[in-house]
Length: 131
Image 1 (cartoon, rainbow, N blue to C red):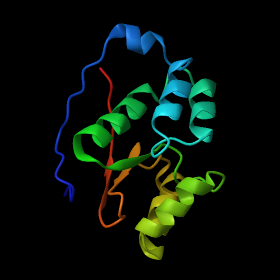
Image 2 (cartoon, rainbow, N blue to C red; image 1 turned 180 degrees about the vertical axis):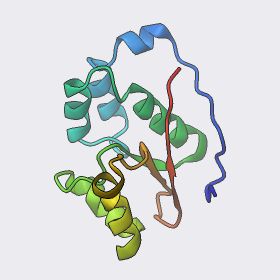
Image 3 (cartoon, one colour; image 1 turned 90 degrees about the horizontal axis):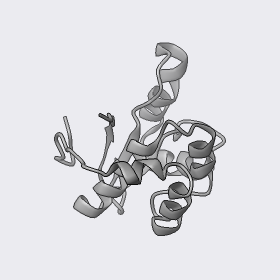
C-alpha cells in the first residue's frame, strides 16, 4: 500500500544531464536541495559514479511534484546520523529494527528512498529504476 498515493511515476531527463553525473551535478543538487541531500550524499555519489543518479533525480521530482522529502540510500547505516535520526522519528522500534535487519537477514538493501512528509506524519518507501 502506498499511503502517499504516488503510484508509478515516469521521469524524463536528457543525456546531457546524465553525463554531468556525479561531478559536478551532485554538488549542484546538494546546494539546491539541502532539505533532501546532506554533505555525505555527494561522497557516496562520487565513490560510486555509475550509481545514485536516478535516486537523486526521483527525490527532487517528488519534492517538486508532491512537496515531500526523501532520504536517499544508506538511511539504515549508523554512520549516517542525520538519516538515522529521521528514520528514528518516522518508525517505531519494531519497524526500525526490521528495516535495519534487512541487510543481515535477507542480504538486501532497504528500498532506495524513504519518502516522508515535512511534518513527519506520513511516509513510504520507494524503489527507483533507471532505463
